[in-house]
Amino acid sequence: MNTLMEPLRLTTQMLPKAIGDFIALSAIGAPILAVILEIIAKARKKIFYDKLAQQICSLSLILYFLFLVLAGGAGAYFTQKFDWLLEWMINPASPFMMVYITIAFTLLTLLPYKLSWKPMKKKKPLHILLGVLASLGGLTTIHVVTVTMNIFFRQQAAAPIPLVPESPFISHFANIPGIAELSLAGLYLVMSLSFAATIGGLYLVLRRNKDDFGRDYYKFSLPVVAKWALFPTILQLALVTGIIYYLCGLEAGLIVSNNTTLISFGTSAALSFLCCAIWIVTWKSATPMRHKIGLAIAPLLIILSHATVMAGAMNLYITM
Figure 1 (cartoon, rainbow, N blue to C red):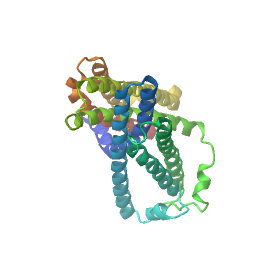
Figure 2 (figure 1 turned 45 degrees about the horizontal axis):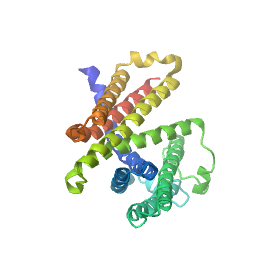
Figure 3 (figure 1 turned 60 degrees about the vertical axis):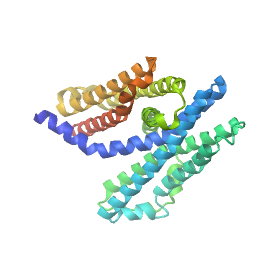
Figure 4 (figure 1 turned 180 degrees about the horizontal axis):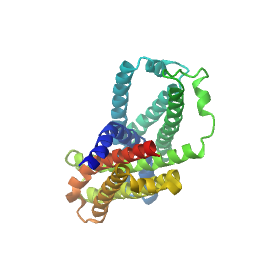
């Protein structure tokens, strides 16, 4: 029992971050997925791809709204707990300014992308360009947040009350990221597509009665979403395994000898494989809507999988 309590405790600690990551990365990935589907719709001249792209685009706005609410709530909570953090949030020289700029740019391009879907029906290249800009805004946000957090935690390690850097905020983002940062950004990109498709399946199920595009549409769209959730998740598992192996190297035995890390990683993999099974069944099914319960619980399983792998990584970092 004691062996199970530590992974459970760490997973519980990581759960709020896992939920935040899932919503944030889903919001970033949804416009990318919408653009890809819209391009496929134009290339193959299939209206169902276009309808699905429009639904995923609508979902992205909902996700960005949830992300802003959660980020605002977290900011209010932590600035009350740590007075010095407010300076990082509002100082014009703070790297956080770049985070605000990239998010604002993404929303300013995502809104017209969504609202102009029908008016620009005959101007697809221009409309797709709006989606590409929104997608680039999200990808830039990944880079900006990664750099900002790196600066913040380095300052925090140097002093109990980390000071905002005196150099202008823009100067921190002019350098080309290193291999480690690029690898992390690549993993986040894959996760954003996986998470967006995962919650996309839930969104289609919840909107089934309201939109009611017909049985043929859902017979088409649910397998498409399932495939877009499946393959990025498999790639994500491979990337995470590679990163863990790279970090541990010849000390890979640390994972096997550490019950907490082993249980956390094993649970995460099992939850991911369970989701993959749900998506494969949905993809191959002649009646995919019958698997709506599996599609509905997949986001919860992915969040738990993300929380457990972070719990294992944190415990591995502490024990190395």
